[in-house]
Length: 319
Image 1 (cartoon, helix red, strand yellow):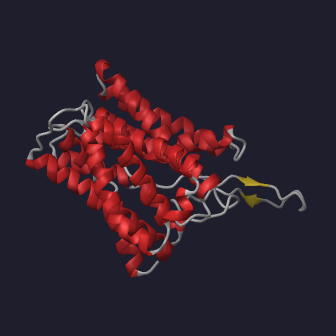
Image 2 (spheres, one colour):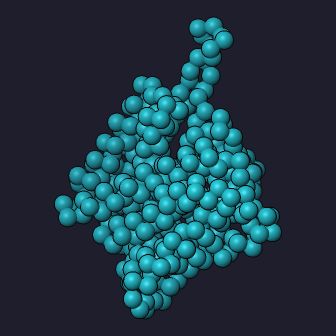
Image 3 (cartoon, rainbow, N blue to C red):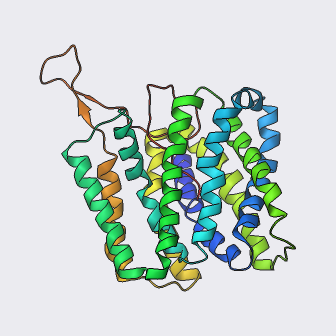
């Protein structure tokens, strides 16, 4: 990978580890709905000129039904639920819990018949969810279990959304899919913001929402597309395993969150489990001899053209 590729990789590893910190700061003073709405609105407005220049929106909006489903499960639902969960959980805990997304995606794809388990993947699932068990068992209070359940719903949404892209939207311009989904999410949120009542933004909340919209959404997607072009989708998706470490580090250093025994034990187990659970499963070529095998398609891509047969695995997602 070139020097530019490494710089983009480092930038994306940091950028998509930041949202948990900013969300935690914002929801301390502002309703999570306002935080989610502000983020999507800012991101949509910044990406809209680029999408219009590339004429990328028309084909996407022609598939509005699929786009709506994707937006609900990947953006509207998760970003709102994540904000509510972080009113109870530390940002570092939230970041670590979402490291289970690749494992959940592996289970979903297997149930759908698009993939299969081998011993290594089963071991990965057991190790990964054991890590979550340590985190929850050692760090989470009983009255925070609802927030943990909410984070698991977010993880399911993040796992399902990219599968929808790869199965139904993979032939569309990625910039169009991202921008259109942000527009739809902002429109979905807008009427409900009237129910929140008068909003008084503190400086911390305002800057956090701005950071979420500008850096963690608009700049992040542009940077990730550039990283894929530079390094390819397989290398680009390694940031999925680095983002939780960034979230934990920022939470401990900047918010004074504790680095707990649950994190120390759970984090390496979750990451190891995710790596094993999403490893390529080798399967035999029908027209070859008994020793011939090929890797199952499990490369991960964001909202980009990949072809239905290329990949069903999820992409790294924003928090």
